Length: 344
Image (cartoon, rainbow, N blue to C red; front, side):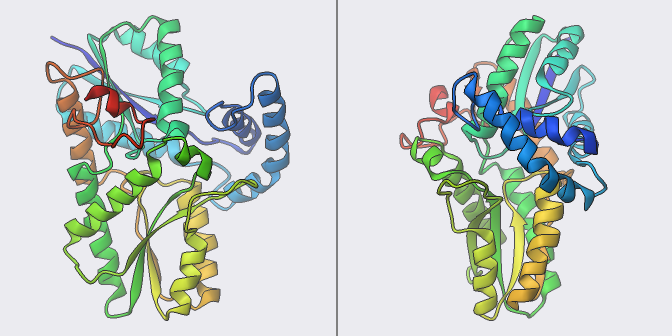
């Protein structure tokens, strides 16, 4: 009997109005988000979280006062356990900025006494600000809690067949809903400051590869589509084009928009509020109709089977400690921040 622990990583979200400020403080105190040294970073994090908590409360009030991300991730964990189909495999959840956080999860994993550990981020596209941050925090927590089992990391999977197939199926359903009405497909992902990408972060390139793979899988050669980025905050220059600009452009071109959250695999505030409410209102004002939002992958069968396949692949003998789902290099030398380059 070989016991396997699979750890799913996600962002986390406040589970009550009272949790909003400490959640924000955890977020902005992450050196992957704000690179200032201690003690300047925690001071700035406190200032920003105080300043932004009112706006964040208003956002979460629109979806019941709390994030649904934990429930979504729990459902994915249970679905993954079923898909793996091994009674000796248990799936754990580690959130980066709210409970259950890595230290608590590492304690549970240590109690489970696994023979092998697979780290599987619920971020298909690698970024130092998401997967990279989660893996660093897990390494610290695992060492503290005495998790010493051999560990394999699935660092990124932007073109994994299950991810692409799931997006393509959901996109087809949305295009069927649009019927004969002219639409532009907007692959919307969370944005990043330009300086992070220029430093070798592969996120933007990987997002573009996912979108292109979904379009190819959809087999719609005349599809009008565009990759764009949402959720910009702060004064820095961010990667673009922005999703709101692309919605307005579609309206000015006499087209509706089918918006697909290409980098979010779970529903949360950026999909349920930003895409479903704020951008829908913007689309109506811009004459961008119809406005159709494609669901996140959630527990889509193709997606979950894809995750299960990556777990099985990661457990194959000879896999490197850091690997993509194929064990091969995904990124070119341009994107030196991606750990999969270390696996080649």
